Length: 152
Image (cartoon, rainbow, N blue to C red):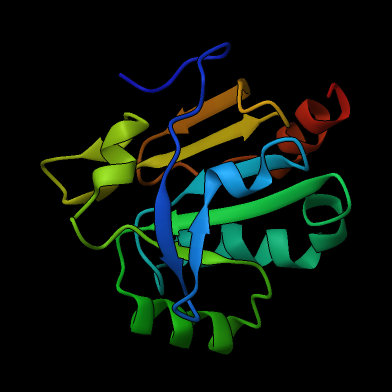
């Protein structure tokens, strides 16, 4: 079962597409976090979602908010994907141990070996304030993220 609104967001430590370590706790007390899980780089719906975020980046990466996108791809795969799509926000690798963070958030599909489309908006205190979880083929509406962020 996915993490629910009001739950404390599980901390994690993952490598980004440049090999840097990113921890959710690094943002505590500083920024709200839009934590977005997606199945795989280079796939149609995922690329569309991540490019839509890129095209609206100031809304999701600013003084109050940090966007973190997580997949089960390897760091080198994420590096190439980010370069190809001009993605200038952290793409985090939940590759190994495979899917541990996705499992902690309740969005890992064991039968598919990847995360489903889960988004968690986490406030500065580390509490989940909004969430949506969609199946693999169903894109999310980033306008809903904007509405949720406006309530924080």
